[in-house]
Length: 347
Ligand code: PHE
View 1 (tube, helix red, strand yellow):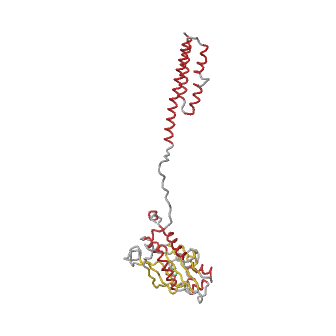
View 2 (spheres, rainbow, N blue to C red):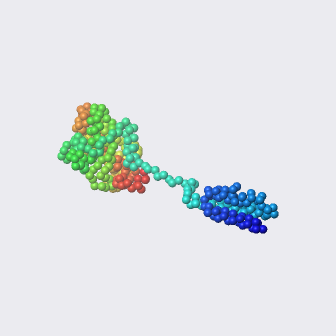
View 3 (spheres, rainbow, N blue to C red):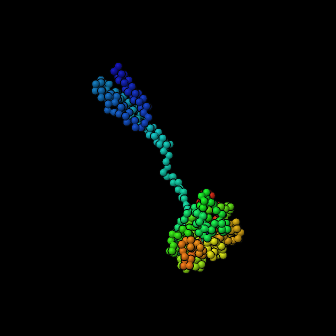
C-alpha cells in the first residue's frame, strides 16, 4: 500500500503548490497563465491521469477519484479568485475614474459688449441709415488740430473751455474732443461733399464726478456741401436723438457758443435718471446736455480746404457716456471704467 500513500501524498502536494501559486496572482490577466500551468494539458494533475495506466488495477478507481477531486478543487479555487480579482478591479476603477456622464454640463459664461460699445453701435447704425460714413482720427493730436484749425489760435481764451493733457513733446496733446477729426476728413476729401461720423476716445483733465470722467467717448458728426442749412442740422439731430432714446424722449435745442461753429447750439434730453425732477447726473436741472453742434465756422472750412463762399456745413459732437447714462438710466458715469463685473453683467 506504500504506492497508494505515495500517490495520494503527491496529489496533495500538487494541490498545495497550485493553491500557493494562486495566492500570488494579483492581476486578472495573470490568471490564464496559472490555469495553463496548473490545470492545462501538461500540468501535474493531468500527468497523474495519464500515468494511471501504469498503476495497479485496484488502485486506479481510488486514484482517479482523488485526482478528480484535486482538479475540481483547483477549478473552483480559480473561479473564486476570478470573482475576487474582478471585484477588486471594478472597485479600483470606480475610485479612480470618477466620471459621471449623466451629470449636467457646467454652464458656459458668455461675454458681452460693454454698454458704451453697444450704444456706440446703435449710434453708428442710425447714422449709417442716414448715409453717413465712419472715420477714425488720432487720439493723440497736435495743438493745431485740436485748437488752431478749429478757430482757436494760440493764447485764445476759448482754449480754456477744454482742460487739456499736454505731452512732453511740444505741441502734442491728448485730444479734448473729436472735432480735430473734422479737419482730417475735410483735408482728405475737399472739395467733395462730406457726410461722416468720427467716434473715439477723448480726454480732459477734469474733476471726477457722477457726470464727468477724465476719459470719455465722443462721436463727431460732420456734413459739408453746397447749401447745407441749420434746419437740416436740427432735423438730422432730432431724428437721431428720437431713434436713440425713443419717440417720447424730451429734447431741446439751446443757443450756445463754440469757436468752431457759428451759430452754435446744444441739445439736451430730459433726464431719464430722475424723470426730470432733478438729480446729481443732471445737476438738479432735469436736463442733460448730450451734444454740442452748429454750422461749421468759415475759418474752419478754410482750414479744411473748402471755400466758405461756396460751401457750408454743420457739425456736432456728442458724448457717448452721457447718452449711455440716459439710455440705461445709470446714475454714475464712473461705473463705465471701473471694470466691476456686477455692473457690466447687467447689459
Ligand atoms: N467739440 C465740442 C465739445 O467737445 C462739441 C462740438 C462739436 C460742438 C462739433 C460743435 C460742433 O465740446
